[in-house]
Image (tube, rainbow over all chains, first blue to last red; front, side, top):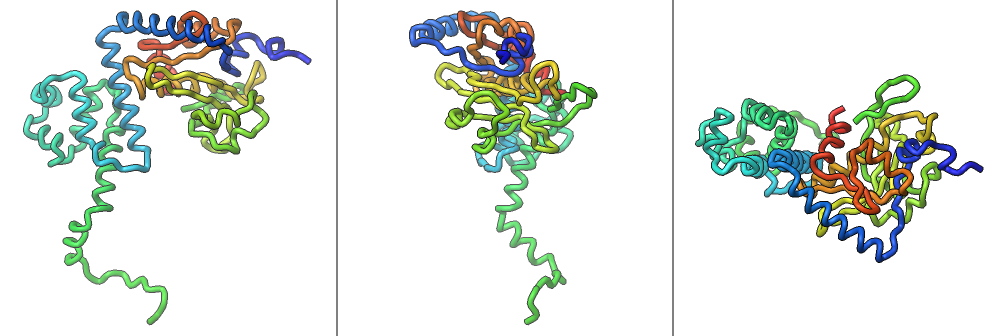
Length: 175
Length: 152
């Protein structure tokens, strides 16, 4: 019977399986030290732009993961993600507002959850990140927030009640 | 994400989701996957038929800020020169890279401890770096791997 090594080329084998080469505790300890040192050197090597790239990518993954999840978290609002995005590269909101041609007051309303962003703002966010965070990712976070609001705002529902008449009669059993 | 049917060049939509116990009992993958149950195990499957093309188990080391691929295997039909679909291992490795960036941003690091004879392949194809007996993938190369497989 042929071994796996004989059946496949090394590249084919590498693309078929990855498995851990078992290390002794001593080897493991030495590997940990070597890895820590290599990573320290890498931290010194990467540029500010590369750091920013990784941070924006992380934010995108966090947003997309949250939008996909079935859990609603009050803390993870559109505003909170936007605040994190701004802080990655700006010290003051005013400069960011200026860069996406938004009034500072309007940005402030969005960040304080007093106003929802419109589509123009969302598309500008995509453009500002060089499409690293697509408009659809921002939109899905916003949709999740709106969905929760629609489901949980009973006061709003009660307020609309008086505006509806001639409701469908959907009784299954005749009384 | 898309995998490519080698024979026709046709692209098929695929997805990576958490594997369930039943997925780990199949015999067309190497290794005893049930032993990996306590780790995070994901499967790459075709979206249309849910056929599983690959499995991977991962471990996140939060304190040390890295992600380790413990095991990865593509299904029997997809190994070697007669494989049906291409890009399975690449997508799984890119997923592990994404998990590292998701957790650690600019400090993201993906680690594997491969057999020495296959290490050269990972260095060449995924730009992994030899660090003693292990291979690591960090910023910026880790982002290249994500971009190669993420946006297709």
